[in-house]
Amino acid sequence: MEAINEISEPTGKHTRTAWIPAFGSGLLSVLIIFMLSISSPDSAAAQDKNNVVRIAKLVIDSAQLQNYMAALKEHAETAVRVEPGVLTLYAVAEKNNPTRVTVFEIYADAAAYQAHLQTAHFKKYKSTTKDMVKSLELVETVPIVLAAKPRL
Image (spheres, rainbow, N blue to C red):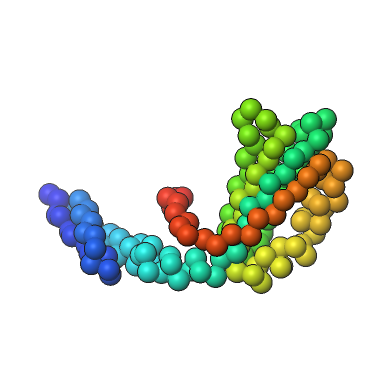
């Protein structure tokens, strides 16, 4: 036997319906309400305004491209894993021109960004790649919308 529970978000704009087995509806309802409360548009907007969002546009020496990608991968994975203030580091290469690399970075706030610049793994990345990078343009941005599906 199943029960239907309707849960409205705090904004009142959306109603989500969950099919919940009758015997577990209490605990699951509490979990769903909690998840909705932490992912509400109001709380996300409050967090986003303190974020530091940057775009790095790089041109890499084609002879060093594989070495650069390995160094970037090591750096990004380490930063996201060990630094709580590093929220996102996405790196992509242009399909038709793989020496053009774009890195999209999101930090919790300015202090997290400044702390990131002082880490051993960032300094290692910069010293390792200094002769691989032909050009670097850093673009400061103002977040408009930062939307992503949650990872489970």
